[in-house]
Image (spheres, rainbow, N blue to C red):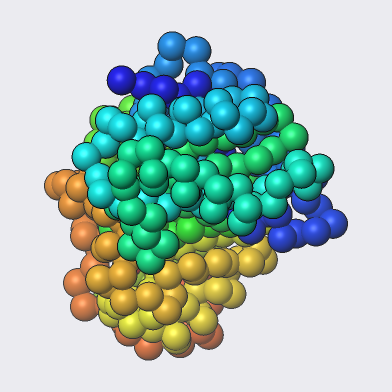
Length: 379
Ligand code: ATP
Ligand code: MG
């Protein structure tokens, strides 16, 4: 049975940003409307979706993934009539096999003459008597939420947690280096969470770009796209670098490859207005992720590099990737270009030495050549 005729959507942090509050609210509303293909109503401090023969669960699942939403709840909207409110609550609680409940009232419409506490106490007493249920404020089996808004009462029973964060598009666009590993999708997602429009760059060792879309890379990109309003995946071939790599000192190949990736990302970023580059590096996690190596590689980008996982443990990253839904994809088999080149990599690369190698073997040429054959997939 369903009584619900609405979904109420709440946002937290964006309400704190005082000066920019209307901007954030409008952006979140627009993002949700695009994602759901439906119009929402904006009330004070919340958004409301009217249900029309919809499956509220499917809608809530989509809403949950929209950054900026702190929670949503399927709700019963009724006019401001306390008797009707009481009838509705009784109708719902009667179906439940419970012994205790609690009423939680929030009054956003201060013109409503009864305070939250008065209403909660009053209704609690009446309903408790009618249904022979105990009011338990500490540990109720069911909480009845009543929000008093300028548009009537919203009655609901379950809050479904969202992801918080900031609405997509509120922080500008950024280019995230995506590998087939566990970490980089999490790094991209964390930047999405802070309101960035995130596009992805992947460097691969396949003969054609289209083949890559069939692999986990395509799948991971599609999964990440569920949290955004669509994204661009750039695919670049690793061949120009690979051909040069035979001449390089073996220990320097991996760090040179890192520099090449960063340089490539920097060139694309500057050309297309990305304000930052993102990687999934976590300090000390693998041989190549030492402070020395990160230092040496940073010199190859004028665009700032963000590493949101830098202080995280592997397990924390794994847990997050499971929550995001990329973990199962990340552990699928894949022919990664790093696996082809890495043998005994330099763990403490010297920044000057890396620059010398870059000049001596003209690695900029490999970057140039890669740039001539990049494809974009809109996902
Ligand atoms: P991940 O799990 O993200 O692959 P990792 O611990 O395996 O990370 P590395 O392989 O050292 O780390 O890669 C460090 C970062 O470099 C990755 O997180 C990613 O941002 C970027 N990167 C690595 N390989 C590629 C690639 N083939 N294409 C694009 N970016 C890459
Ligand atoms: Mg990797």
